[in-house]
Length: 237
Length: 292
Image (cartoon, chains in turn brown, orange):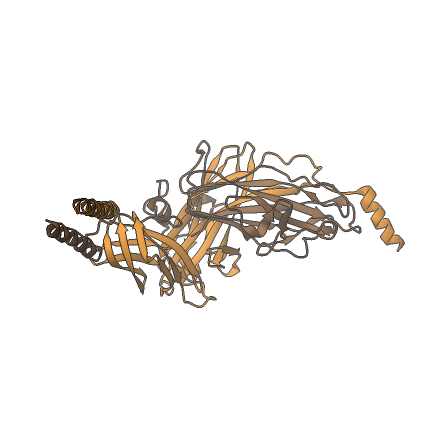
């Protein structure tokens, strides 16, 4: 009796060990990934004609089709919908950034948030300014050190010029620092990526908060300074 | 010296002001679709497309449109946009500005003339930008959204890929085989070429093949991305990942899908069996001792 039980246990053990090294049939499903998800409605938006849920260019023939006479452009006066498919929407929380009257040695900050809503698998935000803050022939330069690639801490009373930092974003990169110790970068004249997000946001609007900061030298000529800062959103292919 | 002092006095008393101007209006809100076009053009062919632009703000917006080009400048996919005068008239917009009232949208046509583009891969972008007048004492923010144009003009650029890294856990327990792969485009970084690698993950033996498309890999760049293949397997398998012509394999031990339950059940059964046999043996030894 005891011998029989030992044989049974031995048999079960051998069967288990054997099954560990014997490959079993496969039942594979579709592909998915946390950072790169295949969604034919987004990744391959070229399966149909314009106007459908997919987009495809059409052959234009041998003649020039541009110009108002042959223009296909038109307004969809009531065509706005809250969120178009295969789109990116960028909105700002303010129409102007108020930094107030500046006193040399005392920096001023403002805030503007960029809100992104997209069904893109990933997107980027970029920034550029049209020129330095300008009043007539006078300008306030960008801060001399600190780039988007490598922001630097603001030294009150020492750092002069216009810079900016990111104070909030989904998965804010560490290079931008934390409250009280933010890193600042000059606003470039060429469109430069300042934030990227990988992976679908799942229909949730992302908010990325920018904080411009400016201080002036004592020799700065008085005036009403202004410039335009452009925030850009595109998908990342 | 006097002039310098005067400047200081003017600066302190007169003040440098930013932000006291009258409000510019409602904050900008712009939407564009599609996210991207991917097209192949024959040499000399013209193709037309459209982009839809919507003004989501409560104010009328002047929107300007322009065409630029881009290249990938880092391995995380970051793009750099630039003007290219040589190709400026190859992609033309029907209009270069449009006024959109609140909640209004417009469909803007554009034409790509391949005869004015170099053969190979073309990376363009159509930008729509809100336009504002400079307002004194204010930093004026504007928004810009873009549709990418990923075009192949005639013969494609080089499509050679290299797998620079492949990380798959040696032991996979779950519902999927997970890993990450780095795909490099070995073309010279100065070349304006790039491709979306054709990826394939196969599991051998008796494995399925899963195909998908990787992200854009520009010349000289490496894109690393995760993948996960649903799996229902048990045992040692060879997982092979290919990107275009490049192939890399790893051996992994899989307990996935229903086999998680089976193996767990067998393990629990064996443990109970072992415990039971020990208990029975002790009880019997106790009886033998009592009999003695």
